[in-house]
Image: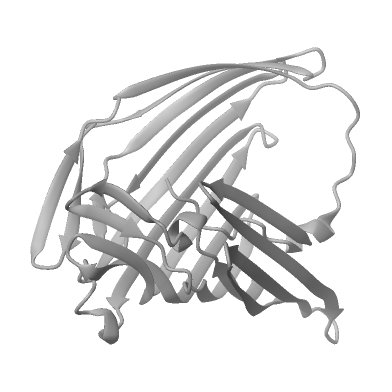
Length: 330
């Protein structure tokens, strides 16, 4: 895989080149145990005017699975990378006001993460029950820090994150799989830590917190190509490096009808949250800021989809290539 992005700003040109090579293999161990291994090596080249440098990452992924009469067990390990954006590396000052300027860091490295997941699933009659437990660590997180003054900030690989999550899911079909009910419950813990050498310059003090929630989905498909679905979800809080978001329950539904042997699909969907007020707490150094927001209480969407042409079989080998690895500035 080879990819190159070019960004022109004033007299400077930013060139970002990413290449990736990988080898994968599936191995059957003895009778039932299976192992799937992907070994990825990727490199990134950055050029900002006369400044240029290269980065190399080795990213293995291993999945072991074993099926018994009690269900299927699986263990997954993978290493991920998230590269900085052009804005975070731009050496030119972004002048917002005399009290607020930002400058990029051309020496900024990528965020690296390691994740370990244990999964278990088994059928229970016509239903299916599954459990997941995961632990992850992200190193060299890209965060904003103060530069030479309180008015000028830049970016550094100045933090790390540790997270753990437990979840349980249940799916139950009825009426020859036309009526389906599925639900998930989860709980997790996240901790964001500022590296000691960056504490004097960091704008934030880190953050940590516990969260829990769930998701419920009910759907029904008729023999006359009508589709009905209802869903609802809730998460107690969304913890990030600089803030904690307290959201409200989200709900919605959809009614759809298929025509012409399902080639034409017309759908009407509605969704929203109640109560429609959410608040965010920003954990700044020496200051705690609270922001309230009142998003739209209800949204309605109408869609018309027409499918034509032939269906081609997808190649699964391409799934090993992860191109969503560049941080985008919102």
